[in-house]
Image 1 (cartoon, rainbow, N blue to C red):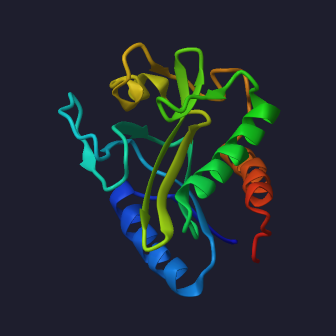
Image 2 (image 1 turned 30 degrees about the horizontal axis):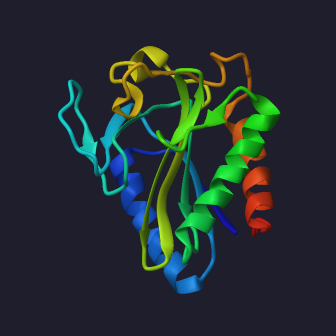
Length: 194
């Protein structure tokens, strides 16, 4: 697995860079994992809709997602000839992470994401092209929840955003990504190339 650490990068720039990594993954047959964050932005997937905030359209699935500093965004440009198997492995990695950090966080298949009661802590949205996945998972580590609450996460009634920090887990984004890298490596039975 090839790891890319981009730090904070504007969403539209990251989307173009992700497409280049996707093209590379199609050519080299490797799994490419990208860790980054984005300055404050709302992105909208294939569900569309009208919103009370400025949005950026994207080609992933799902509805509206909020990104900001303090969020760990993982983009997966992985070999995914069998998307259900790929998706299950991603879920296994995040379940293992939450089992360790916040066991109350559970995956809801009807509203793809991880929740603590009615509080959403992680959003998932993927797309598949030519056997390789695109997009990924946004996990709220320590975000501005007032900004994230301007729109209900994924346009879900009765759902509010939360974060690891708000739920009592005091770790940095870097610490969370270090743990997450272990869980993803285990779920896909791969080591990180250095």
